[in-house]
Length: 240
Image (cartoon, rainbow, N blue to C red; front, side, top):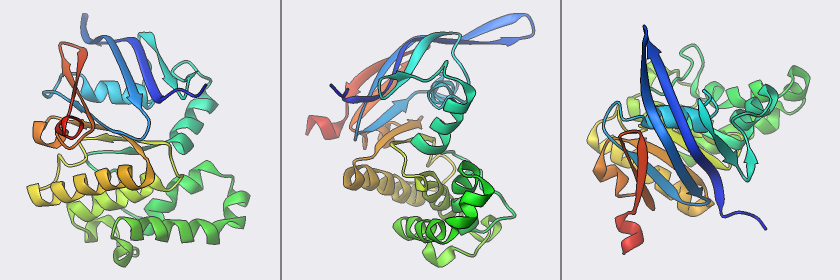
């Protein structure tokens, strides 16, 4: 029977070394991410939120513990499987956008498709890929800026382009690391509203890292990071 949890972490530990000192960051984290929900991981700066996201995205590996995607262990999978997981199964949104400055908005959105296919395969499917990229930009309200480079866009527009890029491969879930942290209040609320709307309308699972309790209240489930562990509580949406 298919699990209701799309992403799970069991007993995850992670430490970093600074000179001869070992600094523990995660001390046995357990988390079950329910499909189709907005999940907020909230905590102060340095609490380990971003470290956990990097582990969930297989950008780093835990010292111990296990991470599962759709019931299959992913943290110790072969490199090719982990690469495919990041390119096809998940989308990642960063606080500082990480758009390539020399590319236009639509070229940035097309990048995951270019990376995930052979040159010949992409060449054969380039028209369909461009149509999808245009559709993703339209979905986030940015089609009119398709030919603009990042330097020609506002912070909110760059984040919308980053969201469109993350959606390009039709991922099962989005991992968003402080997606509103580099934006002014009004723009941040607009981006947050877009993410919640995407989850509701497309049954998209979202894991959102934030230090802002007000943002976390927009989630279905709120996990609080403290002392390297997570505690969970229902958000106001669940309680309503």
